[in-house]
Amino acid sequence: MLREIKLLPRLELDDAVITRISENTWKIDTVIHNLGYLPTSATKEAVMLKTALPLKAELSGADIITGRVREEIGHLEGVSGISVGNTVVGPAVMKHAPNAKHLSWVVNAEEGTEIEITVSAPRAGMTSQKFILLNGK
Image (tube, rainbow, N blue to C red; front, side, top):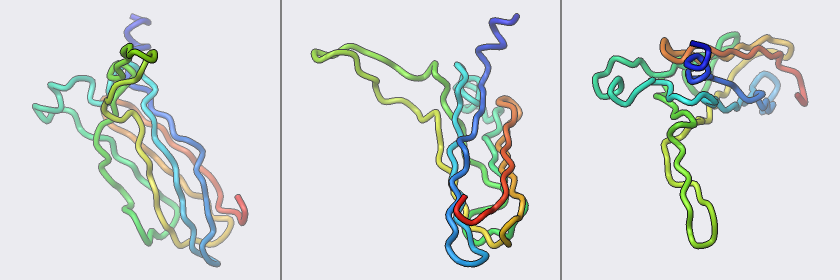
């Protein structure tokens, strides 16, 4: 049982990169990764049958200028989908579906505002990150 649990999708957000554009305008960038073995859909059949809901990314705590409050971002492959092969010059990673996706927003908020980014899906679980908008951070 414990072995199967380790195969499940595991979502992780990179630390957000915050850039101050003007007094109350900020650009927020991060990357969501699936570090688990299985894709966030669990199976390709679930995607074909439309029984696996896509990941949703949500930003709260600020007025959004660019981007969406809640956005469907599709599915992420797990490490099971990464193919490695041998070539004449050595090992090579073959093309595969992405196991990471870049997320970006431009928001309007005062310095010191707490922001939260949440990414979730029923089959993949949830991860979130909170941070405070500070000049130079």
